Amino acid sequence: MSVDQRLEADTRQAMRDGDKVRLSALRRARAELKNAEIAAKGNLGRDEEVATLRRLIKQHQESIEQFRAGGRDDLVARETAEMEALEPYLPAQLGEDDIAVVVREVIETEGISDPGELGRVMKGAMGRLRGQADGAVVRAVAERELKGTGAS
Image (cartoon, rainbow, N blue to C red):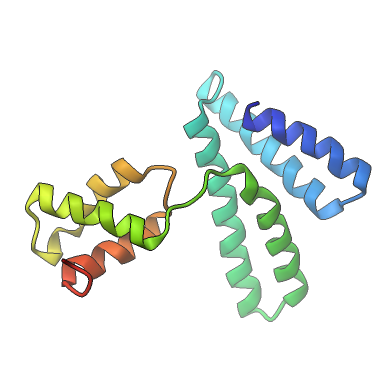
């Protein structure tokens, strides 16, 4: 079952349950996927679907930060609930330990020792971790590894 099919079935269930927050999040996700299909002029692959959903979740995270800064706890709660409604549709994320293993492999393979070459490490690591790890987490791990605090 594709992500879109799961979203459609879960949207119907959210309507039956009267879960307005979840329904709103699922409808928005379906609309974003449809817009991405139109932009791609064809069906989306699994990677494109996941990337679209990740973009939505990132938007929710940014909104949460802004609402927290503005003292709008009611909106923080709504954004958090919508974000949590979308997370089950994403593949499981790797932990920092697993990411560190890949980053170390990239550093060793490329022969990188200079912290100024973070870009090369990120390019190699993200190529291997696409869809499995958030770029910000990979960057933090790569910086730590390059500084030698976690290097083996």
